[in-house]
Image (cartoon, rainbow, N blue to C red; front, side, top):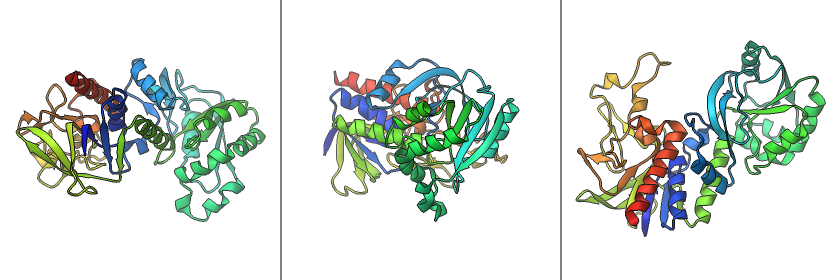
Length: 376
């Protein structure tokens, strides 16, 4: 199979690059093993501090609303974190004072939402908090197994019974000016969070839960749908296992599922993430990139990879593939001519591109632009 560009990795970076290239008429394929960092997405691009019109437009075309309002967001442990660009159902505030009285609502048998931590954190900011648990008949079948009372399982039900939640919250509400709910709404119907806000006579704030992230999974689903509607080929549940490279040009890659049927392309993009998604691998002697064997920035002494104080910043989290100025990975010190790297596999080798979601988006757009320019 021959494409203009093959992208290895179906997370945020890979999907943004794929959508950008498909919109411009380039035939692309994405290889995705499955779960990626989007499934742990908080819903906020914390490091993006400027108003990003191009990013907002790309997401809007996929049915994902973003809003830009520099300030802070409420975190699951009751603390606040600086934020500016977020999904539309994530509340942003000018500062940590978000109200006077809060009703914190969760569901009986659900343990992935930390009501007490939220209350303690908000009380430090001068808010009065009250915690209530809803007993919803529609969730009783999930309560039989702790493994079923998880965010995603609850979310599949919540989109159908959100009106019952609104009704129960209205009954519980007294003089509170703020209602805090777990972020388990809008997985399949993106209008549900705004409908809940419209039905409750108080400020409604949705707060994150233990992973996986409902907003993150929703974002991945909508970006993937947009990519496929544009004609992109999405190879789900497959893994790149090797590459054919000759004279510093990548000609094709091998995948686990396709066997002897190689994926050929004019360009290749490495968007496989880091250790979590196996984009980088380590043994007692080195850190390596497994598909192309490109160079990886790392300390020569293994004891310098980590900080023995567990809660301190860990050096290995900064490591990434070494690239030239055009984000082409180096192999033995020289760039592969038609291979590019985007997203977290860059580590902190490109601080000018930001970190986290900002790094994924900005590097993806930069590489897509380079490919389009080279095709002119």
